[in-house]
Amino acid sequence: MMDVTAGHVVLLDEIGEPCGSAQKSQVHTADTPLHLGFSCHLISAHGQVLVTRRALTKRTWPGVWTNSFCGHPQPEETMEEAVRRHARHELGMELDTVESALPEFRYRATDASGVVENEICPVFIAKVTAEPDPRPHPDEVAELVWVRPEQLRTAVEATPWAFSPWLVLQVPQMALYRLAPAASDVEEPAP
Image (tube, rainbow, N blue to C red; front, side):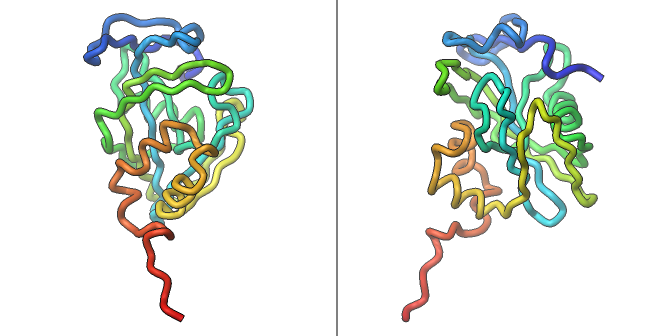
């Protein structure tokens, strides 16, 4: 199995076309070049979404709550292959389906240490039909929790500083989080 912490990232030009590659270990700096990544939101058979807290040893946004998992495709692999590889590595899970949710998602953000994320980062929804049993890799995930999509939306709206900047941007754009009303959208009954 390929080590997801090694390898290269796909570098992109300003219109999103591949223009080379760089070692993953060297790309995230205060001047990170635009490169290709992905985010994945894992959904259980019960309709819950897996939220993870990034390991405290992560180079960017350590200890921050985020979507199920993220990663970078290698130059020679498809996006779906990369999503499935990272699911196995980070969560010890096999995915049943992988579907595109936000194919054009792009963001740039700087964490507290000054390291920049600068990605074209297609967003996927993956599903597992069997009873999910994540086995998180300690170098990737510090904690995890399954929540209803509307609970995550409410939490992100109330405390965006507790979540990764990419998740804060993704949640309002994804249909998954618009299916049920957030707590702030529900009218209180009259006394």
